[in-house]
Image (tube, rainbow, N blue to C red):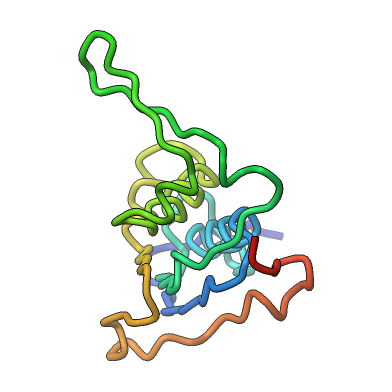
Length: 154
């Protein structure tokens, strides 16, 4: 029995749209990361970009469990004493709430050049509108997969 290894000719990319409204952030990120890598396909090859193109809408309405909304996110400006922080709740209520979802998905992928390439197949929008109707994306209902994927408003 020979081991199947996918070639670029074997790769079939689809477009998927996921509504993040009311979905728990970690569970959403896990599902999206799996789709971006292509691990849901039987022809998965770890060294190839097999994943689908994923569109996440309503990223500003994603839910967090526990006290994660108050958890600080730190970054450094590069200057002495330049440590800064914002809570996850402040980021979600700010100008770019989609960055919370993008960072969660990025951290679910293994680091390296292939993961950075796979992140280019992700589009995250804070609102319900997206400009990819021409690609005819299929809807993936994350809420219906498992009742634990959703949470009431905090």
